[in-house]
Length: 143
Image 1 (cartoon, rainbow, N blue to C red):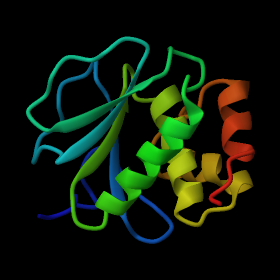
Image 2 (image 1 turned 60 degrees about the horizontal axis):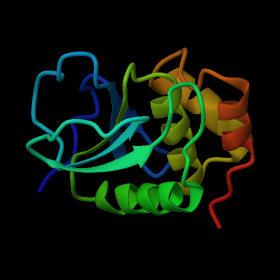
Image 3 (image 1 turned 90 degrees about the vertical axis):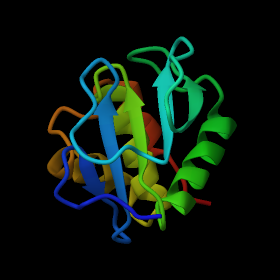
Image 4 (image 1 turned 30 degrees about the horizontal axis):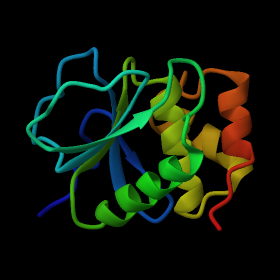
């Protein structure tokens, strides 16, 4: 298997160099290869896709309903990013996706206080939309 092209649309380089793609499910699938594995962050179950997915129940503008499950899913996504194309996706690709990418960056070695800025600088400038999403990232611990 292979990972993403670092210059592909929506691809974020994590502190370790691993690559993960973020995107909005309401938008067309970006050109290029499909992911091997994806976390879908939605309030309702998303439709089926041709690749392996995991649903994290997460209402728009809020936080994941099962935090321990969310952390476990992020750990799996990070592990798989070593050798596979992995993505994180919500409806628009900003709030929930940005928050998950920032938490993923913390798991990958970023300081919790720097993770939102990293995602905004290298993924989307409006990522992590709400104060409680920013608080989740700032209090997120890799341990």
